[in-house]
Length: 486
Ligand code: ADP
Image 1: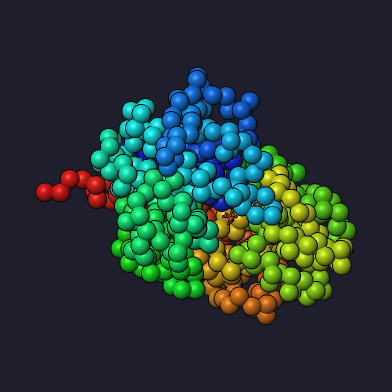
Image 2: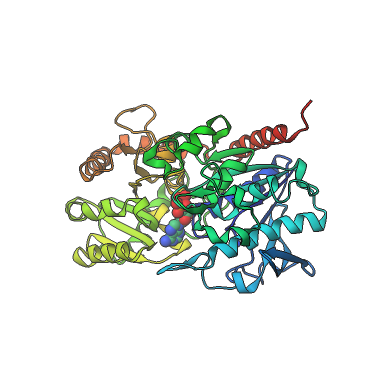
C-alpha cells in the first residue's frame, strides 16, 4: 500500500499546532510497520532549506485556477525515517512570514492559496506518474483533495482507484469562503447546494472533505461522538451524523524521539520513572528561566495557543484565586491579542506567583513539561490534545476538562484511585476548575499518593505504532469502497 499524507503543516518543516506533529509522525510510523508513506505540504518561507536540501530540480506543475494558469513546482527532500517529503512551491502564495495569517487576521487569499495547493497536488500526481493507493487529507486546507478525486478528476488516471481518508483535527476551523470562489476552485455550481459545499451562502471546504472522502476520522473517540452534536459540531453536526458509519476516532501517538524525558535535548537534566532526580533539576531551571522566586511549592504549567478554545478565559477568571494558592504558575502561549494582554496583566499583578511568556518557543515548551509538577488544560473543546500526553510522559500531572481527547487520555485520581493519572472536571466553569486544582493540591501534599499518580502516567504507552496500525485499517476500508463492484 502506498500512502500520501497531505497537510498544510508537517513537522519538521512547518508547525503551528498539533496537526503538524501528527502529520510529521504518522508517515514515519507507517514506514516502521512496512507501509510506504510520503508526505506533501506547501513550501513556506520557514522551511529550513539548509537542513532539508532539495534532491535535484523540482518538477514543474502548471496549475489551472479558474480560467487562468498558475505555475508551480514540486520539490523533494528527505523528511527522515525513510519518508520523502514533497513541497509545493509558488513563492507568491507561500513565501510569507506566517502560514495562515498575521496576528490581526487570516491572509485574504487563503482560499486561493490552498486551492492552488490541492490542485497542484492533483496535477503533480497525474503528471509525475506517482501512484498512491491512498491520499490521507487533514483539515480544511486539504479538504478539496477528496472533492477533486470524486468530481473534477474522477475519470483521470490514477484517481478512479485512489481511496481518500479525511481526518478532522479541529472542526473549529472550516475554511469558509465566499461562493464566487467556486469557479476559481474549478468546481461547478451543481456542487453549491445544502447537500454539497454550500454552508449558509458560503463555500465550506471542511464540509466538502466530510462529504466526499471515503472514510472520515477524528483524533479521539470522544471527539468523534461530540462533533455529531450541536454543541461541538459548529453547524456540521448533521453531516457528521449522516456519515457516522464511516467516522472513526484514533488518538494521536506522540513522537518519542522529540518528547521523552530520558532523551530530551532541551531540558536541564534527563530523567526517567526509575530515577526522578533530574526532574527536580528541571524544576529549578524552569523557575529561574521564568524569574520566579525559589521555593518548594509545586509548579503549574500551561502551554498553548492563546484562544478561546484552550480555555484561557477560564484561567483569567480564576487568576486571583490561583495566585493565592500554594503554587507557582508558568504560562507559555501566543495567539489572540486579548488573551495575551489578559495573561500579561495577571503576570504583572502577581509577579511572584504567575509568570507568562508570550511567544512560540519549542525549547521552553519542553522545559515547562519537564519542570512543572502539574499541567493545566481547561479546554472548551479538545479534539485530541498533545500537551496532556506529553505531561503524562514527563511525570507532570495533568488537570484537564473532560472533553474530547482529554477525556480519553486522563483518568481522574479521586474517581478512580487505582488507575488515576490526573484530575478532571466536567463543566466549563470557574468553580469546577478551581475544584480540580484544589484536589490536585491536596493529592500533592500526600507524597506517596502523588508519586503513584506520577508513575502511573509515565508508564502509559502513547507510541505511534498502535495509532498507525489503526490508520492502516482505515486505509483498507477506504480502498474497499473504491474497489470495482461485482
Ligand atoms: P493544538 O493543535 O490545538 O494547538 P495540541 O495540544 O494538539 O493543540 O498541540 C499543540 C502543540 O503545539 C504541542 O506540541 C505544543 O507544545 C505546541 N505549542 C502550542 N503553543 C506553543 C507555544 N507557544 N510555544 C511552543 N509550543 C507550543
